[in-house]
Length: 340
Image (cartoon, rainbow, N blue to C red; front, top):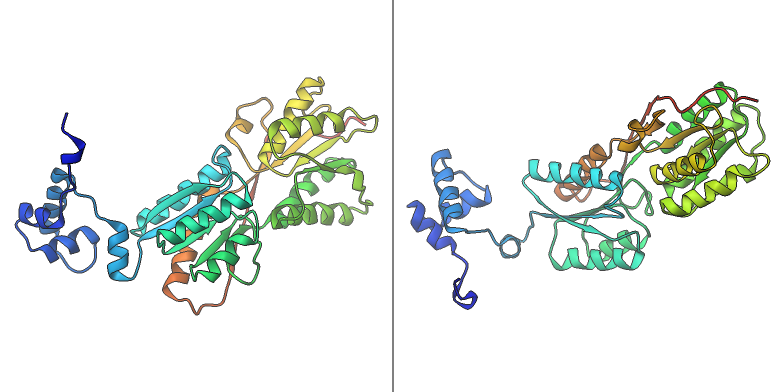
């Protein structure tokens, strides 16, 4: 095995010599900037692969006073929603000639700020993030680093954002339960401070009010943030004497907790309990009956956020805008008319 101390990275000069071109031509071919004939570009790239040459993105950014790096910050990569969002962002970055740097902040404001600092230190062109506090936009604004909030907003009207129409999707789905005859519909929700929870609560309330039913605050049931906490909360709710006939879970994690609690209590879905979810996770189509859910295209959220960020980078004078994507209801077998 070679002594690591003797190893060094190949240089652009060596790549140029191997490809039989000038150093400037080799640089243009690898950076994708400026004209280079197709055959020459492929020859340069083949030489780079053979030598193991990798472009120093940081050095190039310093030289050009620009960056091809995009920072993407998500809250929980173990959640399929955030993983899909990151995948969509990565796909759009590749299509636009950018490299994505991904960080999972585990939903922690402190880790979120630490990640933002890391992105600035690496001189990213901009950041797309699923924020957990106003600190992300505030910090990046001070650093003059463009940012797009995705999925939820803490800086509405101040920075760009890409979100789904949470209020409308929740209203329509709640109306579906009401049309089946349900009157005691619980909203199983983890928070109402963020725009996601706030708007989902508003959509639920809109439908309840339009049906002429007085909102029962006891049916807006708070939960924890993970499956176990949601299962315990659902167990408490479903064990009550006047339990609801339907549950609207405000996200896929809460839906899993409610599903597990119902099974533990011997309640059959949908005979004893109708259940719907905001977010469509893979398991929802694998269980019997399948779970009716609101399908967000998380990948499209990520892709649109990158596209919006690049528009901001190209023209910083544009007014802040919020892109709102629609969400569709996927009907499965988890809802039916209540028994009583």
